[in-house]
Image (cartoon, rainbow, N blue to C red):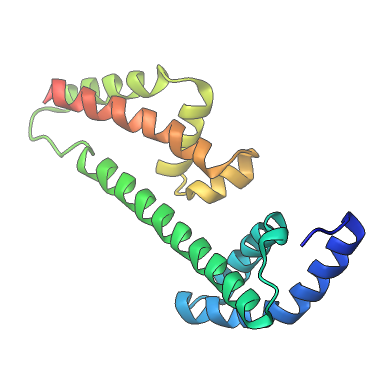
Length: 171
């Protein structure tokens, strides 16, 4: 379908009104989360807008196509959540174990770890500390800092890799 911009907007508006309720119901059903369903529906319709010319002519096929896009958004969300969980588990596995040696040794080790964290660029340090000490999720950090979740993930990943390498050499 070839449309000009005005026709695209009118077509999309009508399409959105017709299919949004079904999309929300579908996403709520597979996610069991109303808020997440609304967020994913917005993401899905953004992708629909970007692929507007690829939509099938048939109404049922169009809805099916939109639901597939919505499902893929949900799967992408799950993959990201799993990746985040794996990174947090990796971090947990490299946490400093309580060492039965004297406090001086523990303080020295903590200083080495702090130094390692501080060798990273400012955003990496800040994102890492917001995540580990403040308990913010990657998404919350991204919103607060005005960057993408991927950027937050990349920076925190760098700090975690350097800490893991350091732990391997110290212990």
